[in-house]
Amino acid sequence: MSISGIGMTSQRARARMLENLKVQGIADPLVLAAMNAIPRHPFLEESIQQRAYDDTPLPIGQGQTISSPYTVARSCELVCHGQMLERVLEIGGGCGYQAAVLSKLAKEVLSLERIAKLVGRARLTLRELRINNVLMKNVDGSFGFKAAAPYDAIVVAAAMPYLPDELKHQLKPGGRLVAPVGAGESQRLIVVEADANGGFTEKELESVKFVPLLSGVS
Ligand code: SAH
Image (cartoon, rainbow, N blue to C red; front, side, top):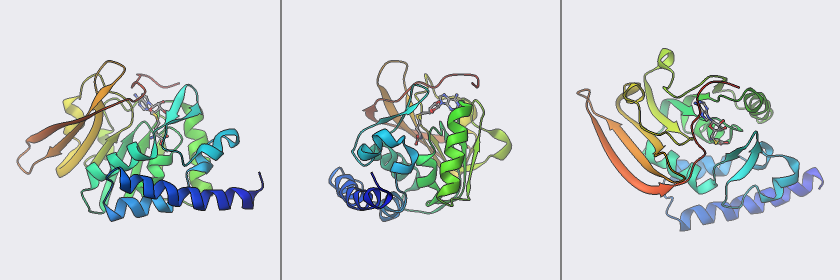
């Protein structure tokens, strides 16, 4: 497929993706604008780029997947609550797509990914798209990244068996965390909000399916 061919396909397909997101209930104009601003196909292997705007997870190599557009938009909406953010932490950076979407919703994004090959590719794609406010680190993000805390938002993109307290404590007062929690094949989406007095409010939302959080780097 020629580059211009991909361009046309991408514009039309992205418009359709946006319509789909709205039908599924994504309403935050900032999130919709961010999803519209970031092309999804450059994050994928050429052989599956044609499916880039379908509402489905897709393989990104190393046995991992990019989350569906709806899943990405939903978690962004849950942490943003209609506001622009200062600093966001993502755990499970994968191909860098969600970090790129978050780069339009925050001043700084720190994205942690345990697989070095994915980090290398994600960095290249982000550079090609001239996204300069995402820092990807090849580390195990199971317990967040305390050195750069606190964060306005923490987005976890891999299934956690349980939600560690350390992670909640890396939120600013008023900050929000969204994570798939559960040990089985499907998990529950959990949203935690930090209050001004060091307490937390936790809400359990819909059932979701994420790849598991693993420990160590590779
Ligand atoms: N947000 C990603 C989704 C990637 S899927 C995207 O837009 O592509 C989840 C990712 O979490 C995988 O790439 C996996 O390697 C990574 N992961 C799993 N356990 C991890 C851990 N402990 N620390 C950092 N990344 C982890």
